[in-house]
Length: 116
View 1 (cartoon, rainbow, N blue to C red):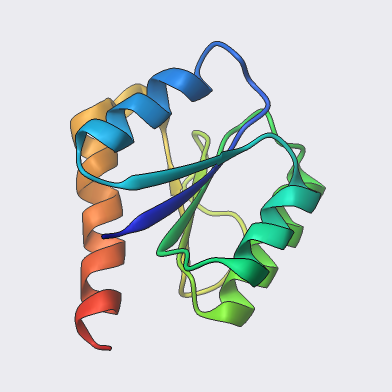
View 2 (cartoon, rainbow, N blue to C red):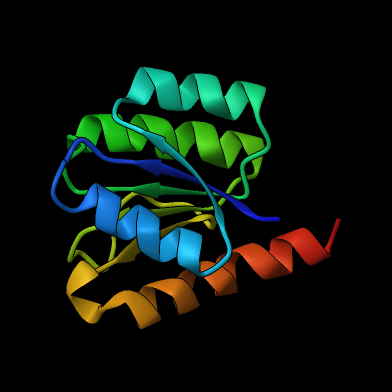
């Protein structure tokens, strides 16, 4: 099973996103702040990190940097096309819809997991 570390402090969108992920077959590890997210990355198997736009940019960078160090791809949910540089960090515009979001995750997770 693929595990998604879903980081968001937005009580209106996070449950919807996490439900979409769970229905797609992902194990969802929801957290509301960066310090818990970093603890989870250190203690559990995480396939990909999804960071909601409710997380401040400096904290997003901190999580993406740690995920990159651990070889975990990350997706930042915002409308920017470029952001934190790194081969494992992507940006996704949530307005593109859940199907495109799930396609993005699948493209990032499956090649990485099959190489193990």
